[in-house]
Length: 411
Image (cartoon, rainbow, N blue to C red; front, side, top):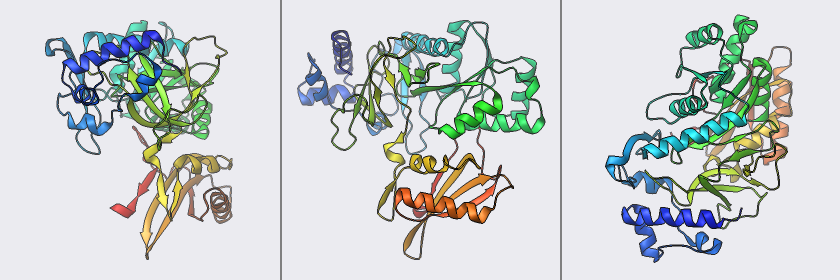
């Protein structure tokens, strides 16, 4: 995607704000002798920003607007070190709600829908993001938050919720519970707006079929407002993202050079109008591509492909680079398997081993199936894993994000 004249002027405003605030990025720009840009080439000379930069700014080093204009903070989970604190101005909060409202509208949600929100509230951006957008739309919000599946299902039936907002893991858990209790005829869901983790086609089809709903994939990250910066439309040809608020480039994660539209690489995001904590060329480590051309829905907003994983998802086993998405693609070829799997990597007797746990129903030969899966995985990645077939429901279900890869080599 070429950067437009308007976007260049917006980036220049962000540059000025960052330099004035003497933020970490403002200092980077001053060191590089950059105070403004005029062309695409200039833009591509701007330094990247990384999550570690943001962590080092803890607690409020990212604050770019005067404190009297800051109305809220949100934070990343901080599971791998210091959390990242993102300050928001009232305009940032409103801009985010406008983007999220667009997401709902793109999914065909209206102000007559009843939206049940199951992601967490608080410092995490999910719950409150889903809520602000729904209120902006004028829909009825049922702000459940996470957990308490019993109560979730009760409210879903009594309130006749029509839209479910959740992680894919929790949508699956709810689908299985509804099936188990035989209450599908009491559920009025029509659509699911699903975010916060990568999920494969198999899981998508299973949730859609079991709940009888249309599914929409929402994109976002705490550092860039939160969920709501992009969503797929009914034609499901990629996620439309709001290029009046963010500029997206796709780079080669090794050379760090932009790749052509249609080519897979790492998503890099620049905020165009953010006040509390603007970010320029922020490396998300999410892998996707820009989809060229027009969408059949007629939307003028550009599209991102499905998120295929993260650059840091990669596992190095026996000298081979393996991505969970490769394993998922193989498992998809076996209709008798459920969508759930778990990969465990360990180091035994001086060598790496990879175990893959998969689920199936009791009508197949577990030993024969495990051999077939192992053989197919070997043809894809070059070495044979140990495959263990278990009954459906044995692998853990999660109310948040399901941990699918457990690397025991470093524990």
